[in-house]
Image 1 (cartoon, rainbow, N blue to C red):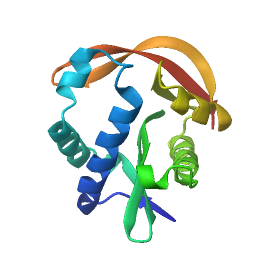
Image 2: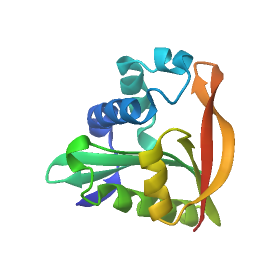
Image 3: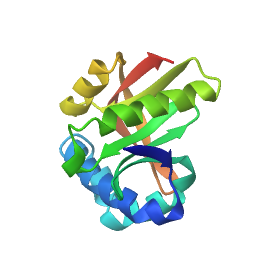
Length: 156
């Protein structure tokens, strides 16, 4: 496995992983209003716009997963279904923590949809602490939709 900054040519793979993973972890756990605007096309647009914030894990010649970090927030962590359980997610999370530390922050944080039990267990196994419930403002166009989440934190 190789971990590297994403390049424009990775956008399609990132979008496909993001779309499938988002649906897997969020359907039934976020407001219907958000599901309605998180169309397949929206993930392709957002992935292309966010390449500068993205780090990918490559296995063979395939993008197996990605992470997006902005400031002290680990915004996205997704792994392709075929690579789940292979260590890709842990490697990406460690890289995200490194990036937050390198940017001068003492702690990293991320938001997990309250009902996404699999993700919550993963973060807890990796030393993240549940800092409590809050409404995450999911960006939609020029506004946002509040999403019931838990804020996970970890000193880096």
